[in-house]
Amino acid sequence: MRLLQLQADIQLTPEDRVKAGEETARLGYLLHPPTGNRLVQFDRYEDYLTWKRLQDAADIQVLEEIKRIREEQERLGGVGE
Image (cartoon, rainbow, N blue to C red; front, top):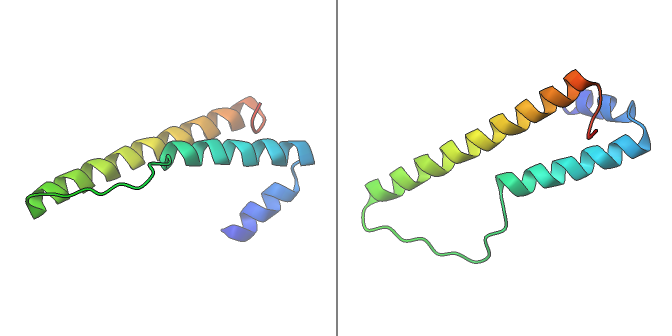
């Protein structure tokens, strides 16, 4: 998988590689925004499980949005354009 990604990257122009890297950084920020130091406590283990399930669902939604954006960009014929 990694080799395929590297082969695809090498086919991009240097400008397109920079644009793709910037896009990846922006999308990474959406998926895991900086939160600073945070301590989360729960009264019950079930509360933690509920919170974790909601966090995971939010991550999945962001990943699906990233996939949709990339597919749209490919359909339009370019990365970061």
